[in-house]
Image 1 (cartoon, helix red, strand yellow):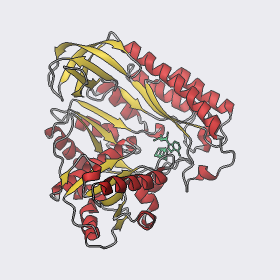
Image 2: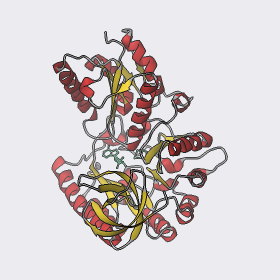
Image 3: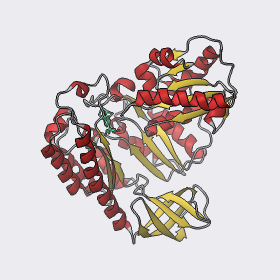
Length: 440
Ligand code: 5AD
Ligand code: SF4
């Protein structure tokens, strides 16, 4: 039976929402008097905050548990292991049965982590994958020290049911957090050191409240918080991209010129089979409207290659869409059948070698466009939010408004906003030269 833990380590996999949940779990355990440690093998309690979106997520969790036990065992230790996140939600009690872990807690129930840990320490079963109506957020401690760029979950879950995706099952239905709670948390984040806040949600642009403020109304309210210089949001669905939100990109100075708007495929036939509920053309027209409102906006997205039934002609449609859009950056994935989703049992699954080949060709096109976007920003002057120290002496790293990594030499503190001229661009980062220091 594991003793009551004194130290803990949270390891988060996957998306930014998991990173946010991991931070909140860490704050929760710290509020219980436990001490955080960077070394998982030396911690009394290890929380594996898992992701289920692609590939052999479940098998990976089991091998991670095995490795953790081995590493800790070499130090004569036997940590309490908690599995959180989307694999916990999907697998539930099976994880306890198969891997003999101590705690299993789903993404909507982690406010109960202290109680579950206490139950496990007392030798009782500790499983909670409920999706309670009452939100976990009201049960979490306040925000403490945070990075200059902080996350804030404002919306969870998804009602879109794309046929390849597990999110509607693991994260549940779309739920928006209340306006006042979000504004309060944003103010607390700024007090704790945040200069930039990224609003998170599986479908963040579906955020709304009883007053019908919409995400743009929330952004306009956050824009009025003194000391909050930058606002971003991710991830969005094309069908929830309202005119109000597009207008906010034109009007709200603190709303950064960056839009992560996944399109997944350029083929109407595949988009239909994916149940995306938009077409190639409607996506392109939408981006035209966004660019009319904010001409310098950096476009980002997600793509899936090898969805069941995808032919070479369908894939050519994706490549031609990429050619016309000019993405500033994008993520691309091989289709991965997720148990329980409609696409997993569709006919015409695409062979692995075909997927590999298409992914390579797509990534070559996206890399080309990313380099072109970066090169086109050279010569511009912009503000960089300094996030950390670089490897070279005096080097600092930060982000441009277009979410590019920029390195510069200068006597600046983490959290400073610095005016720079962008002087050269590589594929993944740019060099900046300081002009004048912007107001912090
Ligand atoms: N296979 C491959 N990629 C997927 N994504 C979601 N589900 C799958 C899947 N089953 C990708 C989508 C989504 C991103 C978060 O992950 O592109 O936008
Ligand atoms: Fe998954 Fe589609 Fe919802 Fe995105 S919109 S979370 S891809 S179901």
